[in-house]
Image (cartoon, rainbow, N blue to C red; front, side):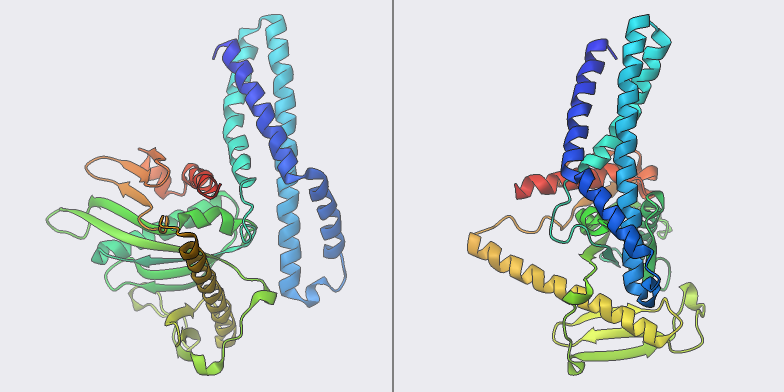
Amino acid sequence: MTPLEAQERMVALATTLSSIETVLNLPAMREAIVDLEAQASAPDLWDDQERAQQVTSRLSFVQGEVRRVEGLRRRFDDLSILYELADAEGDAGALAEADKELESMQPSIDELEVRTLLSGEYDSREALITIRAEAGGVDAADWAEMLMRMYSRYCERHNWPLEVYETSYAEEAGIKSATFAVKAPYAYGTLSVEQGTHRLVRISPFDNQGRRQTSFAGVEVIPVIAQAESIEIPEDDLRVDVYRSSGPGGQGVNTTDSAVRLTHIPTGVVVSCQNERSQLQNRATAMAVLQAKLLERRRQEDRAKMDALKGDSTGSWGNQMRSYVLHPYQMVKDLRTEEETGNTTAVLDGEIDAFIGAGIRWRKQQSA
């Protein structure tokens, strides 16, 4: 790049980085670290395992955020010095090295800038995600499993713990549905833009005539609720079914009826959990998921009433949100933000940061 282009980009990066530091409030985050470290060192911390996990998880997250910002600040300061030295000595090699570092810094700062846009009431929460096969038969079930893998790989790339609560396998291939928790701060705010219908176009591997098939899968993202927010569910409103956990092809995972399915009779909401060997543990987890879904349902109903009062006719942006085309050409395109790429393999392997970042920015613009 030309010296003028490099200078302009450095000025833009400096402005963005300063804005990030202001919004995140590093002094407050450092104070939070001191407080959380004190809580984490308390001898009775693990007497309450749920609280202990919340404290240690929050501490690890805040420490990581501070390290990220401080690391980027050091890199930026070093880069400024490198440009000055390269310019003073007329060193083309050093200048090329500085340009390369500038290019590599841009995505890191862009990603951190997106994080500052997560200021919603529930954005800092962990996320509960349910994927369901929709129209498309066996291809839709296979597509739902592909999406499950995509989000699993995304979480792996970000070192976000993921816990699968329930998987309902389809008879021929793929899954009918799966529910899992992403146990990282801001997982909900980040992944909530993935909610909606995902559309896949490809040559069906299940069609012996090799015809093109369009299939659909739905993604639901809700925040994990805090203990104080849990809602009372009368026993009379619940139907509880227990059954044996099973894997693909009917492979036995458990020899006891430990899996639990809860049906909330007034609303028809159904949740299942089979990841634990204890029926009591599975029931407790399923109840937490059910409460989260009912709370989200209540929030959506309240939002719909407010939208009706305001005359909001924009409808839900979550439906039919992204298209993945594998034939006759390769392209993934977000129908809300126009973000697109031809590298479908990378996207299906979990490289969806550009789509998530664009979605968060788009959502912020819509609410402005």
